[in-house]
Image 1 (cartoon, rainbow, N blue to C red):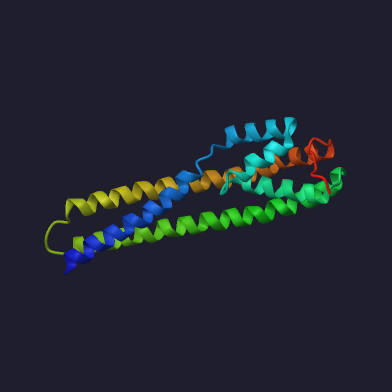
Image 2 (cartoon, rainbow, N blue to C red):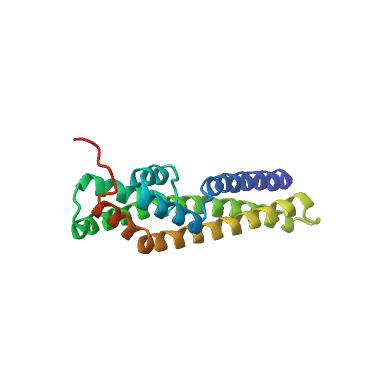
Length: 183
């Protein structure tokens, strides 16, 4: 019975880590390259920058897209008005991105706990723990470390984008580089 429980927990834990890994891999966007692309598009074609940002959810681009949408809804070219509208929109979108990453990290932690429980059950038995359980435990630790590093990278990108890219959004609207849709 312990054997089935051990393998069952290991499979469930590995599956949960797989779900977390897929979520992390779908948003593998490097901040320096994305910053350069978004800034370049904001300076040349702000409408395309909005499309690019909308196509990359789960990163700072999602928050930049929310700021662009808010600035477009304002329809003003006054930099003071734009700044008072885009910063709260950006911050609200950042909260949603962080909540999404918190859920992904929660799944990874639950998977890690399931595999740790499986390893503890295997260790508590009188025989040596099966090699498969040890390999699954090592794989989940590696995936967990990758998820943690990726989450830290996303958090760093969110903070940097507010300081580096958000002012460029305000400038794009103040200088009229964004073509507002007809009313």
